Length: 140
Length: 140
Image 1: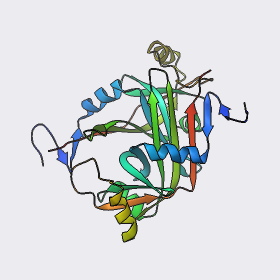
Image 2: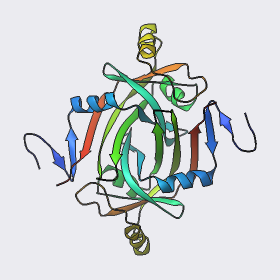
Image 3: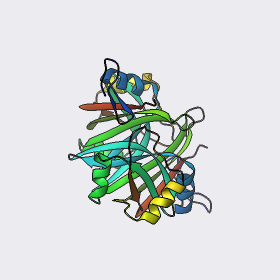
């Protein structure tokens, strides 16, 4: 089905890139999909949007290891409500990199991006996606 | 840090396997991490727990393609609250398989597992994880 407003496929509306970024900007927790020892893994992070990139903080470990090696990661955010079966999701895919630029780090701190977990998470990781897509459940 | 009750690492409590299954059983929406065309992707699904396996329904497509090829997938569920920075997440990893056993399919239907999206999602996919881990944020 296709009209001027919506592109709907099997009960799912496909979102524009701008709509995807608007949704990414309003959520707080997303999930990073990486490969660890040849197996897929998903880790939740609280994050911020800076320009057209996603940034989050992390301690040295699997997510960071992925980031430092410049690995391509998946970043997903969603929001669903069981009561009316409504919801949306956005998937962004791109290379993850550790931020060494002090200007960017300052902006991240100014944006108030503090890890929700206690402990030390000194590294800032940035994903500027080369691919972004979003879907919203549509009911008749 | 270690005591009889908790194992805490950098602000995160590690959960037992039983605690992980208890949390998986009470949530409704999880995320499947797969590889599509050599790139990582994450898709949300509403799901149910049957025994020590996760089941969800899907239409033919990427998730199903992963499942039919017996690919190892990541399955993640989490719940976070920004107000007090509380939350937990569970990660399960295992081979995904399309369910052909009619008994299992009947149980899935009896469990009331209906896709939240409109449209046709006739296939039942099952992930019996070989690995499961969970974390909960702990604040002093």
